[in-house]
Image (cartoon, rainbow, N blue to C red; front, side, top):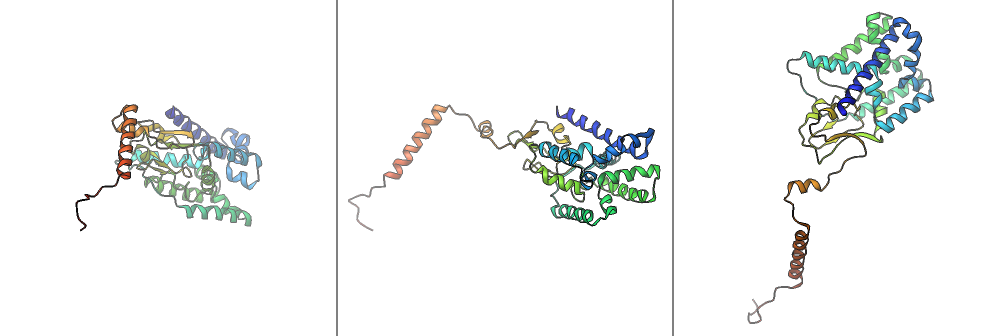
Length: 297
């Protein structure tokens, strides 16, 4: 099931990115037909224009399902995923992803900078911090629609290439991107989340090696939901079905010990426990009697 969900996610994200690119270049009139709609559905334009509809939609989606926006809708995130795949294919010895701690203070500063720029009317800075706008600037490289778009697109493309070569994955989404920081704080409360069942996890590390958000610590079976973009890479490779997308969180259960320790009949175990308790109580309640014929030392 999760492999199917992963394929659906890839197809959906690629379709959205292709539609945004076609609208940006106005291929076959796509910009006139759906360009404005595609721009308004992105989070930062919705926040700037105070669009209650799309803001409520993405708030509800994140609270229910996690950061689906980052993996399904954000075209820049899709571009980063493509760059990472190409970098891994071109490398003779591609390095797997490894867990990295969250850089919370950078995420906090990115949100503060975005809010300040928006409140002070620095539209250029707000636009540079918008991942969808940056994707459109990269697309403009091929259309050369404006000098500003060309320069910014070259810079963004260079940064993405460097991150992909270093196997950084979605590190941009989870550090400097204000959208990732905002959705990450909301996804802390999401109903559905990627979770690892500690009873089934064998700590093989395969999930950590494919986690492009670098938010899985396989040694402790933990997932940082604030950075998880719900890409289903980990669930698709888990050999023991220990990783699931579910409501709530798994807890370590006693059946794990029952599988490790030899099972005993309940009656025998209960009797042994009772006898052991009785002997212990007798030992405690009956102090050692001294020999009356023995003199004091």
